[in-house]
Length: 91
Image 1 (cartoon, one colour):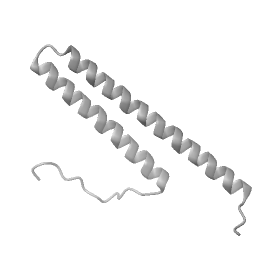
Image 2 (cartoon, rainbow, N blue to C red):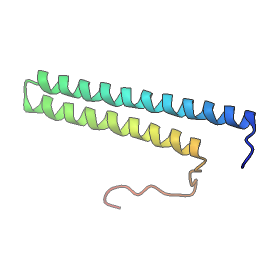
Image 3 (spheres, rainbow, N blue to C red):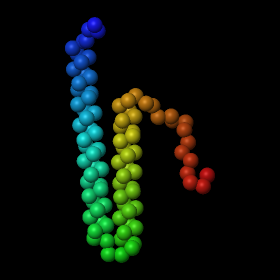
Image 4 (cartoon, rainbow, N blue to C red):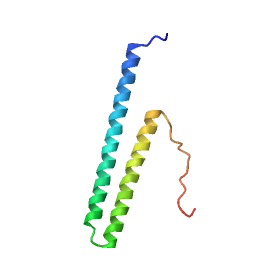
């Protein structure tokens, strides 16, 4: 049987609780963004309003996912490659 250290167990539980709380926070952010999108679609009066709502929703989701990825990568100990280049469209 493996003996567990009480401090290791408490740290692990604290990390788990922090992780679970952050997942709930991101879920709330995503839900609010989706509700805002639905409201924007509902109140759109022209095709340009509809297009603007879709672009805004995509931007909000991209920003949220980028933040999630960055935070969870750092929590998992995955380091970002500083030498990596980001290729744009048409490169």
